[in-house]
Image 1 (cartoon, rainbow, N blue to C red):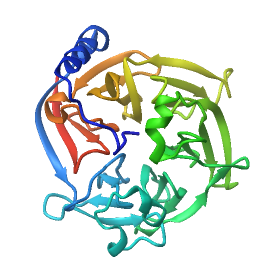
Image 2 (image 1 turned 30 degrees about the vertical axis):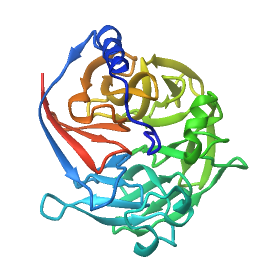
Image 3 (image 1 turned 30 degrees about the horizontal axis):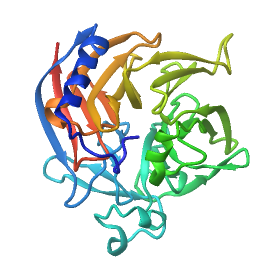
Length: 340
């Protein structure tokens, strides 16, 4: 949920205190060394690669950006090109390279992305247009839903697809505040977010959890038995059980020393969480934390050297050596090569 509106760090003492928080609270486990960092640059004047997705063949990353497009990375020669649009009114004249929040109803703001590998379809959570889907060839996405159980979406944010069932799990960050009002939502400790489930067979959206404080990232477990959801305002991640003796109940999984955003699973079934550590929105150190299904933090990566105080929105592992980092405040996707 990293937000274009957030201000940058201005106080050196605040930075020192934040770094102390990381040292004392966030890294009692294995840290990773990051020897290489590269930037996959977006087209000119384009910013905000919030979430990242890769298709079944490993192509990508695909990412939604601030001017309303979903872009696809085609390698160093081709770079990022247009793949999809979340509104039928998107045009270069009105939207290309713009981040005017007043134009979002025209241009859209795609955030969460996730492929159904069986069908090749890409599901998109757009902050203003709701839940949409587009075929493997891209183009204008088809709207699926804008309400859940009679209540309109306020701020669709992140999503993940269960590859076994085809169900889509996504978050509605707030029922009161939209993307434009995120600072007010944080200031007022808003707790009107929801965790939602879309079943493509019945075409119904079901509310799984209510009362979430800044519902941000969500991810379904590898075996489909539970869903994790992060709460950006409450600084925590909860586990919602889908199957087993605890089915349709939730429990606290982990409380962070910062604000957690998107969650992505690894091939082994662990999870990377993007976390922005700091006592306030003015003092941020971006880190990634890998945790297991029991809430044990396995690794912590500090991105401060490359990102400074810029907030990040996603950390996604690819293979054994790569970490991709998304942020609504940058003009590139960060790529790290790491080793223990």
